[in-house]
Amino acid sequence: MKKKLLILLFLILILILGSYLFYNIKPKITLYGNDVITLKINTSYEEPGYKTTIFNKDITERTIVKSNLNINKLGKYEITYKINYNNKTYEKTRIIKVIDNNKPVISLLGEGILEICPNEKYIETGYIALDKYDGNITDKVIINESENQITYSVENSIGNKYMTARKIIKKDTINPTIKLNGNQLITLYLGNNYEELGYTATDNCDGDLTNNVTITSNLNTKEEGNYRITYTVKDSSGNIESINRFINILTEPKYNEKIIYLTFDDGPSNTTTKILDILKEEDIKATFFVINNYKKYDKVIKRIFDEEHTIGLHSYSHKYNEIYKSEETYFEDLEKINNKIEETIGIKSQIIRFPGGSSNTIAKKELMNKLIKSTKEKGYIYFDWNIASNDTSHISSKRIYNKVISQLEKYKYNTNIILMHDFSNNNKTVKALKEIIKYGKENGYRFEKITERTPQITHKIK
Ligand code: ZN
Image 1 (cartoon, rainbow, N blue to C red):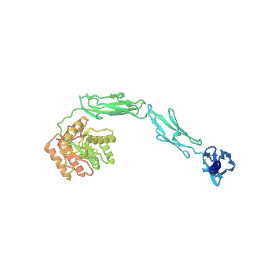
Image 2: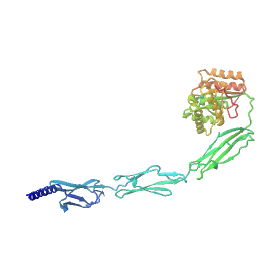
Image 3: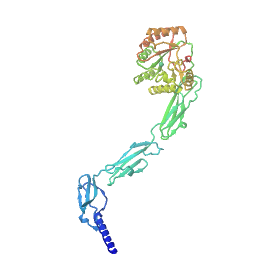
Image 4: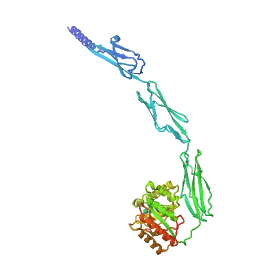
């Protein structure tokens, strides 16, 4: 009895297991070759094959293959391998990509033709390789470096290749630069010695070339005249640069004559042109302490220089509160206007007038003392005035004239530095100027421009 029950239980177990296997074993579809195949357009597709099994029994011929592949048209297609089993459908899919003959493209970042110094090592500036189908394949780029070019080549997944190159030109066509310490124009009195103020030379490829500078000079401090010192340097590629320093040797001035120095601040402007016309007519040289004005007036600066007047430095911004913040801000402003002058006429100036004069009430006394000391150390000469025209006030030309003449008659200086202004539309000064010149000529004054040898007129610091 017990044995029969055991057999019965065993049979039930077999039955359960059998039906479980019957309902749960799935047919297996195996695809040979890749699941994704890329083909060129207008070629042909060869089926890599497939196999369908169940319980290791080959039922491949029951497989239904469906495909929408059109090898003559670009696109992405599917081949499905299907089998129906036990009222269920089992399938696998193969993707076919039909593509054209497109090539990948390499784009070079940076210059296509690169000029570098002969002694410089090439540094890769980058590249990107893109393919219509493979996407970004920059990591597949192969680089070949030779003496005068870098080649970049890449191949996409269907074997199309692309190659490009970057040309490397190893040469140096840029001249070295020489910077002079101190001023480019120096005035000395007869018998004084010129001591070399120094210089530095640098090159874009060779670096510091100061020690390679050669100096030639025709300077003779024992004879009045204009001399030049020429500094020359050559870089390793043969580029030559040279720069001159001009030395004027003068006899010491005599101070027993009555001289008027006409000075004009705050130009250039439309007023300056009118003043220059009068000066030309009267054959008189004067001094212009310039600021940075509109670009259109740069040609007026050029005219001042060409007509041999003195260009003095006044200020770039003419904003007292900014300029007189510190020694640094003062020199920043001064060097800015000096650089502009150099760009416009080719040389710098060493004659300056502090904005508001050295007696201005904006700069602190300590700062003003410092500025006077350091401008001198840097080779600048500053000039204030001893005759004020008051032409910044709203007064008539007649009053400007009276103001100037009354001071000339009262003080009877030998050196008379007259302060006037050539800011825009200052016609009263233009009008007064004619009369002042007339008075000066009739009363034995000589008109001179300020130079390095003009006796310095300076104010008390406030
Ligand atoms: Zn001013």
